[in-house]
Length: 568
Image (cartoon, rainbow, N blue to C red; front, side, top):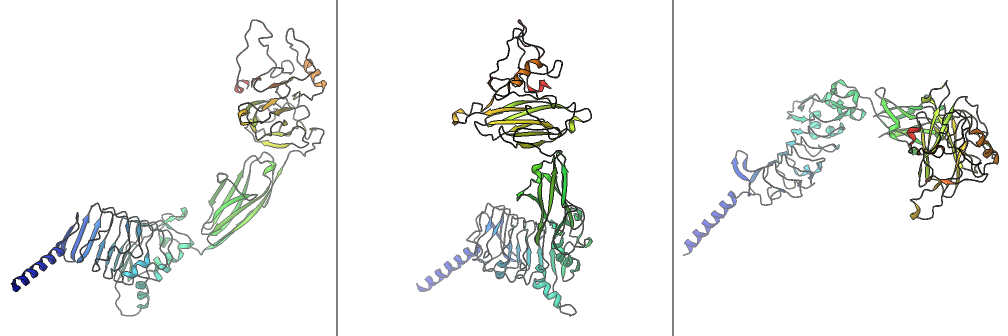
């Protein structure tokens, strides 16, 4: 009985050993070849490394699957593993201890994954590694210690990644290269090491200088798979081979300007220019009163290998644009700046007094402007004007000056409008405040009575936001302002002389019209059409003379309201 039991137990043990040796992963296949026993998983829907891999597996090949990471201890049950192929997966993360217990690993292939970085110290656990394939990933950095833990490496493929800058020290710290340097002049046989570094977007500036020198001087036992490495940038070196370029040492930016004091007339364009000598190419920006200026007004371009020119355009310069502009340049070595002082010269010298607006420049005969309030908003108005310049001037070259402020303010804000612009919005007005807006053409100055006066309404509550806050105080004469012949806007505080002059200047009187009262006449923008010419006072035959209305000629209907475009 006992011998039979012993035989049965031996058969059972042999069967279990056989089962364990022939077991495989579901969806994968196992085979025996010259490398030993292999596990092959092609296009299997694996999302992680299987935990029950047979212990006698020497080669694992999992490709075109859905692996996204290599966690810690992924292969702790297969310490005899020598070949690991994980090509064409979606691996983005590799744990620093993912290769733990793989001291016998000779070949690691991770081609066609999404690795942007590799924990290079993980290779301390794989001292026997000879082949490392990382091509077609997203590696953009290769630290100086990257190859320090790969003493027996004979093949390294880093092609088709995103490497731009590499230090020469990466390879100087590589034990394989160090052995080749010590063996020079000796008969000691050293195995070759193949490097693949092509198809990377190399930036050929001073930072790559050491690496370019290494590539030019490298020789057996280190062999380049493709020695024709090319530059991707900067533009003037794009497409050139490494052996064609000579790179200078890096240099901290040095900024300069041809003229640090500029003076420009009001309304003219001005360009500020600074030059920067630096390597690598610096980042350049402009500031004004500690504020970063808009990039679309700045253009920066290289003019030589180590020099760039940066220009800041200021269109239609105004007095408010005067001041110090700073051009700053920086690269990884530091930053420097240069200041340019801009003066904006007015065509006249202000002589405004508290009693009103006096002449501050000679007038141009024949020039006039038609101005109206084209739009009203909750907190402001939009002015629209049409100018006929003097015969000697081109209308497209005419610039204007708007003087805006509280009615009782001695000094108004001057707003300079460049050529080709015929509207301006006055916003952020205070409620229940009387304002005055005056107009000037080129070097002309508005005089007393040549302005539009209006009062903002009271901002009592949010329920009243639909009501227009702007009210025209008195409209006796039209909002057609002639410069310098006569620009009239009679207000509630106007002297009786203004009212007396208006009837005499209007040769066409309404039939049956009554003499105008000396009191004030109030109306709001809601009741005044935008194109209204009611009360127009201009010489007969002059531009904008009042046409007869329906009230002037019985039987005729009032023409429909016209927009501002019809006036022009």
